[in-house]
Length: 123
Image 1: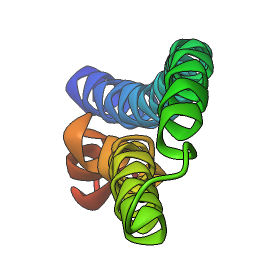
Image 2: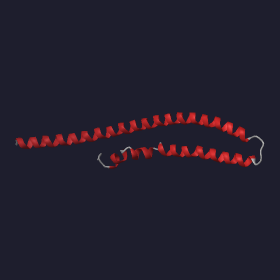
Image 3: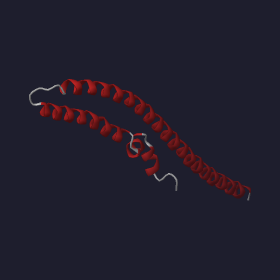
Image 4: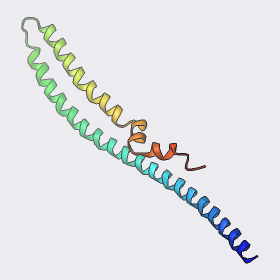
């Protein structure tokens, strides 16, 4: 009869440990995702500040270039449209890269959190 009590005790302990392990793992994953989100937002702020200063420099160069190009010459309008097109491309290319790099889906996949969530380990 003693072995039956030890077996039941062992079974209850095992089930309790599995339940506790799942809860700790779930809360650990939540902490991990919150930390990942905080890191992503701080990186976004640093990149924003960097690009803010870059835009100031680009604006100064643009004012100089537009000032030079606005002197009366032949076919001025075509030169300004070309300059506008190049400037627009140079602005939209980094914006598209930033939107991709800081999306939740990309970070969720690259961090490995998608594998942890998809592995039905919490049931």
